[in-house]
Figure 1 (cartoon, rainbow, N blue to C red):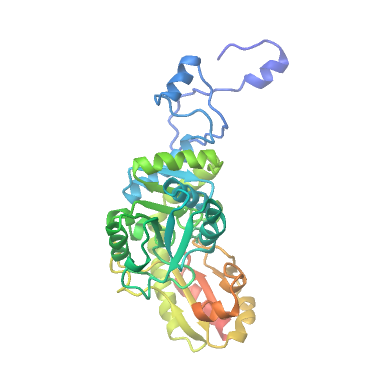
Figure 2 (tube, helix red, strand yellow):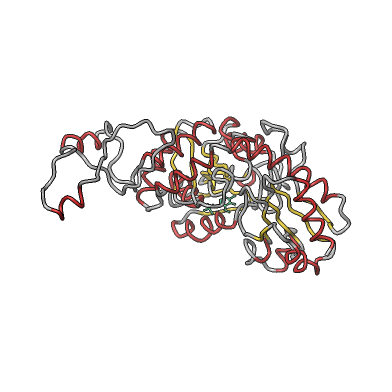
Length: 385
Ligand SMILES: Cc1ncc(COP(=O)(O)O)c(C=O)c1O
């Protein structure tokens, strides 16, 4: 036991403390500490010269590193950083690359939060955003300016689950000397690793499939060591660091990513096939085998969106669901449904709704690991009403 003061008040503070206890725990301990203690000034000096790893949890913590290193390894990246949310990770990636005066090309089908970050926050730093419709273009050339720096797209888009020809767009962007950042949240490295296709940065809302249990908000950014060095500084300077417990929970979820994705993707295919022939369903949005031919596996993801044939039945449909919960997020082990028009795409005008197909009758389904037969029965019952 370490020596300490003899009086009760001092003992109660110090007596249980065993910071250096060496035990072989099977799971990673949670380093629930805001700061790390040092033997002396020499050790502090070592931290600043790069020999020591941790000083203060906002700057780095073993649980944050475990998650970031794992995703970096799975995505084939040299380095990674975890963040307090997917948005924190996206912000770090964008700010690691962009300077005032730069121009960003982004797919018009990106998550609303990413759009708001680019369009509302980064424009304040004179960073210009241009959204382009990848479904209608065959080249980036007409949109490239001398200031164009970064190209951003998602592997599978939300909520219409479009899969653009990512290998083609990455190649185009690289030919123009752009930095390419891919949001791989909906696909995960289980389905595709965008860095292997030439991307520079890959970002995840680890809140979704990486964590997988709807019990954590976290994000990860991976890429080359130089960009990630800057991104780590940004996460720390902007205070977007992931808490040790959230990092630990996300890492625990990650262990079953392959099993969950396999089951969820297989279930989603069955559900999509069922919905395609249901008379109460008008259109099913589910990636085609052709559009996902560049994926590492013959699976199309675990999200299915669809519209009701009779839009006025939308309230009854949600009310009729018994165990599938309405929750405006996705990717948990439990099947859940969301309604883009009243949640993520609330700000859309009626005109925008019609133009994009994100209409009142659109349902977004996140397929879980339950029995596909039960999911289908539950949907069938609700559609019948
Ligand atoms: C594709 C995508 N990227 C990023 C985010 C933002 O992630 P977070 O909510 O963890 O900040 C989301 C959230 O829904 C998302 O769907």
